[in-house]
Image (cartoon, rainbow, N blue to C red):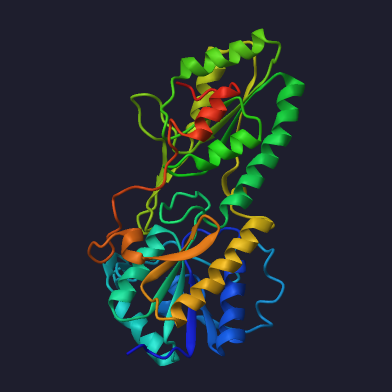
Length: 376
């Protein structure tokens, strides 16, 4: 028998991105207006579920938030309640499963179901709470657009707009000073941000995780442009890019995070190499870093976030717990969480990999056709 749902909890986990508030808006308004259901938002991701910190959400509290980046509920990417870091009396740390405490908090608050908004790590915990009997619906979130279970994720479009705007501005400086400008962008192991942002921002070289590069090929491209009278070059580098036969550049390891490996710094390394190989140009490096996560949310991400939120409520109320909403073409559908993150044991995410750029796909072929180099 389907459990009656009278009160929904919302969790926003993992890194922030534009469009989260649009999802919160859609969930809250649909739950209240369409179903007469109460809504509460847990603060700082799963940490709020464990520490019982939350805020009631009503029509007034979500009014006027659609355009805002980030999340009004705050977020955290360090709180896996199935492997939660706690401090012992002697100051050392241990990891233990505190998910039963979270379930008790839900019962105490009278919350009948959860809508969890996040990426791989956050949705893995959503799957595991569903296995413990909690009705859960997932909403996909990442600026990297690397979740294969949906055509596109909210936040991605706003990030692309930020990258394109930055490249437009860097372009004028590169031209004015005849410089080689190396711009590093996010993306983890997928090169979508670099590829689509670089295409829109008129990059001359785009370096992707999916296409290992040869530094000498980049030098050749710069010299070709010089010979053509274009004495400046824009190079867009995905943080996961790597040289042929080499490894990705790891910036740091965050041990208490679900996604512990932080990539970054490859753009700076490339800039140093080029400054030694090219004497006729100054080489400058810029890392767009976290400005790609913030800012005013684009129209597309507001609309997609709102649609995800409304459809997540519909899915939950229609008995579709254990699934995640997804975009296929122009239609919102759904897919089982286990098909998104895998059906492994608690805390285990599928090792199948994310949605990556096809090195022979249409985007890459179009870029090559207009003269963009991928350094290979």
